[in-house]
Amino acid sequence: MKWTTKIRLASAIVVLLSAVVCMAQDVVRFIHGTVKKIDHSTKTIVVKTADGTERTIKVSGEATIKGTTEGFEGLKEGTEVVARTTGKGVDESAVEVGKIGKDGFKVTKGTVTKFDKESKTIAVKTADGTEKTFEMTDEAVKDAGKTAGKGVEKGAKVTVYYTEDAGKKTAHYLAE
Image (cartoon, rainbow, N blue to C red; front, top):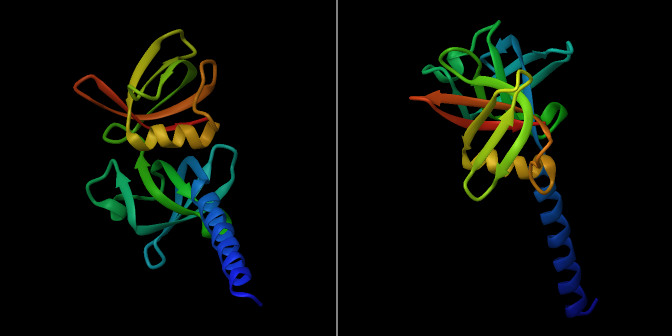
């Protein structure tokens, strides 16, 4: 085999592997449900969603746990959570887990009336006609692009997981 052929073959393999890795990293899912089981030895949680599906999620040491000062140890059976995950099946891992409730994330569902990637803001009209505006974290902006391809557009139905501090609403996750 000629040297140039070997270089071309090696280059093609590198490009192919890079594409596979990028595609795997781009898969972002949001799982909203109640913690049914916690396994501290394997650092996994089982989350039961509203449709009754149970999802086993790995929670590595790099994962961020929000809404509790105790981190992973602060998650308890019966706790309502939202998990931002990558991978699927047995490889599904949490990047972040957020506790839903008074001290954690709040949830709003509605229709997008405005999405501005540059100013990192989104406005959502809820079922009762109220319009809420949120500032978005950098991750929320990135995830919005991954979830919707080009980004969240006006008229899209979304669920916003946010925190509120001194009247300022910050969207951490946008799920369609």
